[in-house]
Image (tube, helix red, strand yellow):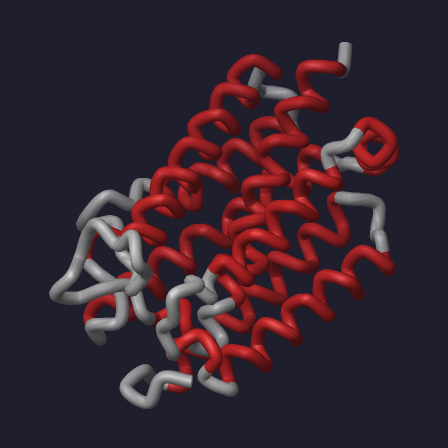
Length: 223
C-alpha cells in the first residue's frame, strides 16, 4: 500500500473494483465460477503487490505477469464456443452501465497524480479522455434502456470507449518504470505496482475492454 495516499482513496478504489465485478456478474448471466476465478486472480495479484514483487526491476519486466495472463484469458473468452454462451446471457443495458466506474477511477487517478504516483498524462488533465466514457455511460445506458438510442450509435460509443481505454493503457505502460519506458521519466507510473491499484490493469481494464468488444460483436449480430 502507498503510505502517502489517504486510506479513503484506497477504500474508494476497492469499492469501485467490487462494483465493477458486480456489474460484470449481473450483465453476464451471473457466472459464479467465472467470477470466482477472477477473484482468485485478483487475490494472487494483490498478494504479489503487497509483497513488493513488482517494485523490483529486473531484465525480465515483471509487469508482464499482470497484463499477459489477463489478456490471454480475455482472448480465450472470445473463442466461438465461449462467446456464443456469453451472447445468450449478456444484458447490454447493464454492461453499458458498467462503464460508469470509469468516472471515479479518473478521480482516483488524479489524486494519485497529485501524490506523484502517476504522471499528469495519465489524468484528464493530460492524455486520458476516459472520463468522457465514465460521464456518458449512465446517460447512454438510460437511453438504450428506454430505446431512445440506435444500435449504430451505441456501437460507435463502444468503439470510442475501446480507443480511449487502449490509448491510456498504452500511455500508462510506456510511462512505467520498464526497460522500454518512453514517457514521464521525472514522475513515472508507479501506483500500479502497489495494492490495491494493481487491480486496475490486472482486472478492471481487461473487463472494460472485453465488455466493449463483446458488446460490439453482440450488437452487430443481433437483428
